[in-house]
Length: 504
Image 1 (tube, helix red, strand yellow):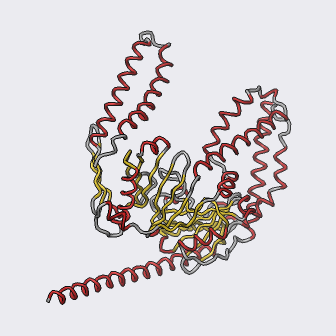
Image 2 (cartoon, helix red, strand yellow; image 1 turned 90 degrees about the horizontal axis):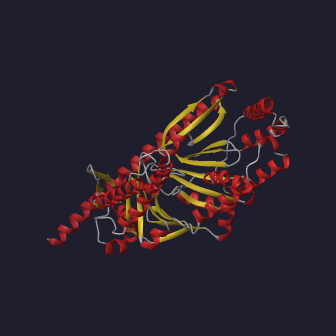
Image 3 (cartoon, one colour; image 1 turned 90 degrees about the vertical axis):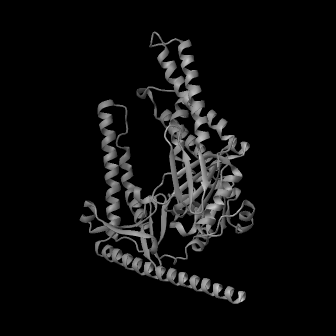
C-alpha cells in the first residue's frame, strides 16, 4: 500500500521549508564575505536546492510501500538504496497516531511504531489517512492476539467496546497547568526576559532591579509552562479496549496511542507538594517499548495526568492488583547523612559566590546562602520521610523524592535483575541501594524502582527476597500458561471429534 496522496505536497512544504530556511541563513551570511557570490547566483543555487528537495520527496513517496501481513508489518523504502524491513507484530509494544492542526484539516496522520528493546521509533508512516491509521492500530492489536486477517468492515464489527476509565475535567486541567513546570519553557525565559526588560551592566544592577528580573523570569516560566501543559493534555481520555489501554489528548497536536496491558512493566505515582496538599496525584505506566517522556508523543505512557489520589489508586489497582504498601524507611542515620549533604551544598555555594565577589566585586551579600544551613535539617527530614520500600506478595514498591514524591509498583515477574549498589559515602554509613531493574527504558537513565539508603544487612535480605519471589512468580506463570495451552489443545481435539461425529 502507498502513503496518502496528500503526504507528497505536505512533505514537500515541510521539508522544503526547513532546507530553504537553513540555506537562506547560511547564504545571507556568506553573500557579503565572498566576492563571486552575488544575489543572482545565490538565488539560482537556492532554486536548485528547492528542486532537489521536490525531486527527492517525489521519489521517496513513489518508492515507499507498506503491507500488513499476518505476522509482520513489511515496509519498503529508500531513494538511492532500497531498504526492506519486516517488523514482527509480536514485538510491537505501542502504536501511536500523531496529528497537528494542518494534518487534521487534511485528514492525514503520522503512525509511529515502538518495539521492545529501546526508546526509539522503529518505523513511521508519514503520512496515511487518519482512518487508515486507526485501522492499522486496531488490526495490529488483533493479529498480535492471534485473530485472523479481516476486512475493514469485519474488523470494525469485532472491535471490543471502549470503556472510559478516565477523562480529565476542566478543574483538573487548570490545576495541572498551574502546578507543572515544563523544561521546554526555560528557553523562552532567556528569550523573553532580556527583550522585555532590556540589558543592563552587571556593575550597575541594583538589588531591586535584580529581584524584579527574578520575579519576571519566574512569571514567564510559570505562564509558558501552564500554556504548554494545557495544550498537551487538553481533552485527555483514557479507555480500556480489550487487552490494551488507549488514550487521546492534545489541543494543537492531537495524539492517539495504545498501551498493551500485558506489556506494562511498572506503575508510577507522582505527587509534588501542591498536589499532595490538594489531595491529587498522577499515574503513568512504563512499557518495554519506551518510558515516561519518550516516544513520538512525548508521553504516551500517561495513564492519569492528574486526578484525586483515591481515583488514581483505584485505577492503579485495576491495572495491577497490588497490596497497599506499608513503607520501611531508611535507618535514622541516613537522615543525618542527608542533613550533612544539604549543609555541604550551602557551604560550597557560599564559597563559589565568595570567589566571584573576590574577583569581580559584583556581589555584596556573598554570605547570604549560609542561611540555607537553617533549612538543611528540614530538607534532610523530608528526604528521609519520602523514601522507603515495601515487599508484597506479588509486587515490590519503592518510594523516593524530595520535591516530587515518586512511588513505583513493580510486579515480580517483570523484574530483569536485582542490583545492590554501595557508593563510597554509603559504605561509610553502612548503607546500600537495591535497584529493581525491568525491561523499561528508564533503566538506561537510572530511574528504575530502587530502595535507597537501606541498611547494609537489610539490603542483602531485600535483594535475595526479591530474587526468590521473582523465581516463584516465573514458575507459577509458566505453569499457568502450560495449563492454558493444554486446555486449548483439548478443546481443539474435542471440537474435531464432534465435527467428525456430526459428519458420520
